[in-house]
Length: 127
Image (cartoon, rainbow, N blue to C red; front, side, top):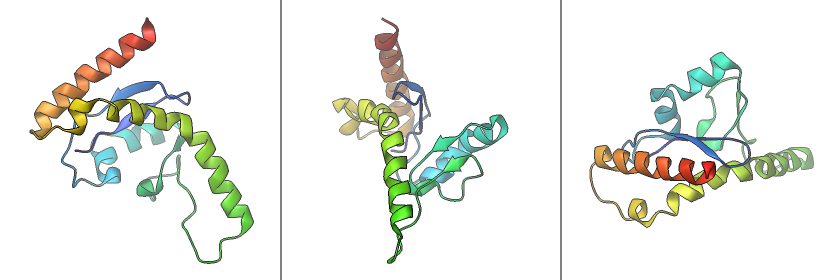
C-alpha cells in the first residue's frame, strides 16, 4: 500500500492519505491527493526524498548521486537528511502498527484502518 503522510517538522503526524495500491509511485500519489498543488499554492517548503524529484518549486529533494559529487553537495544532502529525520518519525509511527505491516486486504479497508490509527495518534498527542 502507499499512504502519503504530512507531518510537522517535529514529527507530529497531521494528515494521512487514503491508501492506494503499493505499485503507485509516490509522486503520482501525492499529485492525486492534491498535496503537491496545495503546497505550491500555499508556498509551503517540503523536504522530500528522491521519489519526489520534479514535483515543484517548493519540494526540495536531495541531489542525485553522481560519481564525482563534490563535498559541498554531500554536506548539503547530510544537512537536509538531518532536518528531515524528525518528519520521518510520522512514517515510523504508522509502520509500527503491526496490523498495517501484515495487512493483506483491499486498500479501502486499509484506508479505514489508517484513519483509525490517525485518530489514535492524534488523541495521544492531545492527551
